Image 1 (cartoon, rainbow, N blue to C red):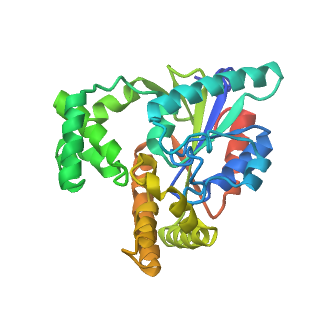
Image 2 (image 1 turned 90 degrees about the vertical axis):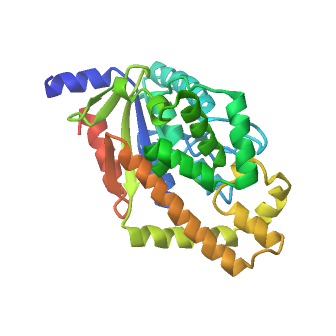
Length: 333
């Protein structure tokens, strides 16, 4: 296929620009820069920023940042409301379809920015899911094992059954570990083989974009990363900034909901221990920073496993804007 043909073909479909990468690397800043330049809006795919009671601990975009560019799917759920990657994908696809239609009717470039470090959620929007088998009895058994013995034995079983998913699963989220094992036990196979329709994806590597037969748009994915020392520095600094902004008080307001799945995330278990005088604050800060660094490594493992990600150095975020500019103008990278 010629360059001109690729460019023409790509120009016929709306474009989803997806920004992924580890926590604290600067995804929000880059997404706002792109949204302002393209005069478009941002769809958040951060599964913790969905919850309205915990904006500090999830580093949700501030009121000032949201004034710079409209954000969607931020702070719209209560902590006890059930939500899943599949439901998010359904809701996001519905919103994006209407948004693209509106942009095209107004003669504007049909493009939207999706940003987030929750790999399962971004993938759900980009590619969709195969129907995952379920068995309430198996799930109940796994939940009982978790309650009695903790997560470690379940993680070991997942490692034996599906090493690939074990390397990337969010260990701060027992629900995801249990769901993956439920599928493994039911099928006597691997969770990864059911997770998505990757074999049906059609990619044009030379063009730099991904076309999925189940999605009426093309996807350009930017991965934002930084040298390990710099990323760790940013993680450590952000933890202290969040505490200065009132994170402990935020944790105090939601401690009565501590069993909610959304609160089984980095920071809140440690702060709950502080509030209940089982841990001093200095120790909590160190453990929060350490857990966040581990979480960032798992995020990078997930995104590096994806194909078609164009990596950008977080020290030069303008390179990401330039890359998107070239793509939008010419239809290829």
